[in-house]
Length: 227
Image (cartoon, rainbow, N blue to C red; front, side, top):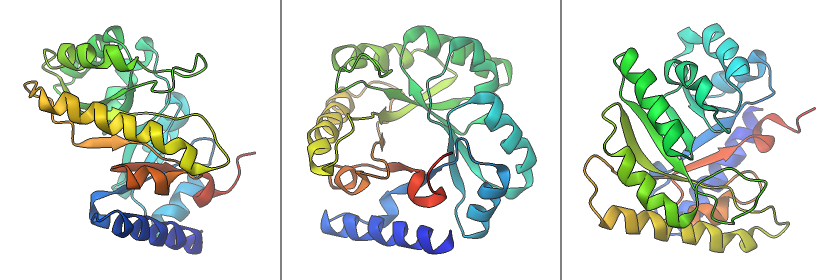
């Protein structure tokens, strides 16, 4: 695993430099869903400290078991409002806020534990019916509404493009998310920073980095295929 991680880190650095960016601008989120805590521990031992999970129950077991590790945990899957109370206790950043209903519930649950919860708005740039996320048109309104919720801190956007064998075909979707981020940033909405772009996975993260990704979500290239 250590060799695979080093290869990914080298590719991230090369993609950043090719795009005229500092590699320090990009964080690697190791997607550990469906992988046992022992695999996460191996990744920790190899120097990783940021992990992405899709399911609350599975994540809770790992977060509790590895609580002394100093790892950061991001929630990257579809989040139901009735799981918000668990999400705010477990995660340093929630990538997948896709509705005002969910945002309000996260705000309420974060207030109960005296926390300001960092979040991203998930945008369904490709408008695929199988994917979660707000529309491009609704994203601005959602960002504005979140700015009024005192226990949420909106820090950027997330998307998942369609799957392509050729990663360059995903590039227009990443470009569109960056343009949307820049537009929202230009509105200077109070309390909304728009510093983060969560986009790019194992098959297309280099294209995402060239379009401005700050968080790349990589699982298979680190942990291998999921069973």
